[in-house]
Length: 279
Image (cartoon, rainbow, N blue to C red):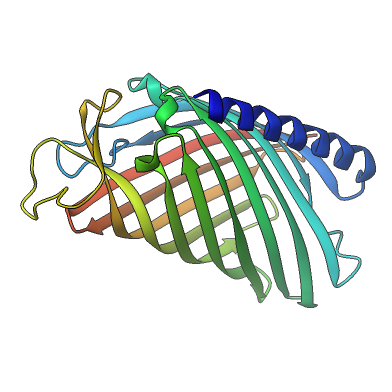
């Protein structure tokens, strides 16, 4: 744990000072956001049978520097400090700091491309799951007509946890379609496919002989055996957002996710409702 703590503190201080510097030098097209979220997950332990559900309450503070729109190439920045407290499995509660610099390209007034990198330091109450992660994202968005828009993205993430069984490398592809019903209200539907490593929990030996040749250990947090394997993940979600005022906004979202690997198939239902304030 000391190894993670030393690295996390160094990254936290570095990211914090970068955030202050950016805020002082980039007031144009930049803003702060504070938010609170109440969420749930029907399979928080990623179990193959006998899933455990849980709810959580989180809070966040973000600094966002978007493209000004005055040129075809501009830089962006997002820095977020967040924390979540789980109601039942309290050892899953965490705090995280994420920094994501990027470049936005506007080849056409109705087409936007963003290239960004990110680094995240995450401390979890179950210290085995504390991790440093890095990666990148390529995203595109197209305006279709007056009210519709579409988007596509690719994300690469490499997460190095305190215990290797919780470390993973993942590649994800996603698409979404949205509609602006008014200047203040929108809805979206999206699909994401990802492939990579993931931890999964088991009560007993599964029909496909889970754990053969795989990393495994017992988790006090989940009260189950944990293994790591390659999985295919499919997720479909819907969301809606409304701006109550220029500063106050809220979002509600739901997603169904199916995960398949050598050990079997599992699924989960998750969602949240959030309230945010821009300043």
